[in-house]
Image (cartoon, rainbow, N blue to C red; front, side, top):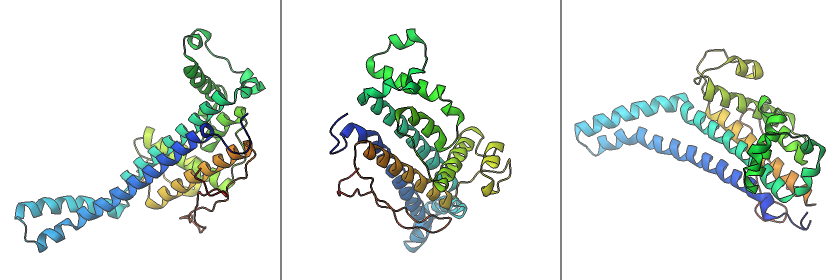
Length: 270
């Protein structure tokens, strides 16, 4: 293992990339809602400027569509952003696992990884980098991680690498909800399915109803994603004998809470 005085760049790459993806999704949602708000106001400006009737009529039709989305809380936008956000979390955890095995070869001696079995001919045809990715897929599959929901899937993948740990109950619940909402959006034609309704009874959903991701729900999922990212930062830092970073989370839209900062104690970026 490298010097314990700091954490190496490779140990940060996956989390740094995940942070950039989450921030990009947040910016996309903000910019889209701001832009559509301008579209909704466009007819007022055209009327003031006495624009051509045909131009004004077209702008009024577009504004009516936008106002309908605004009144509904932009459910399609927030739903698609939720899909992207979950994919960003999946990619971050997978890439962290790949980087960890690539650079911390001692984990290959663990009993958990010694039990991994896979098709040898396929493995032998791969180059070294592809072999690590193949191994991570096999860990994921043989740990039955795909059958897990929410954060449990990530933890089952990270466990053989010594990177799993405790996840607070509120965060576990928010990520479970996010995962089931993501699945219903992707696989159930954007309607509430039985799995979502039964796994998240606190949402009081009815099977078959349209699944609308509200701005409030999206903020919950964004907050949970960032909280899990911070959790991974701290686990990795502890592995290199570094102090965990101290953070506070943004206000929970469903309750109350403090604000998030991602600044480590030494003032450097994660």
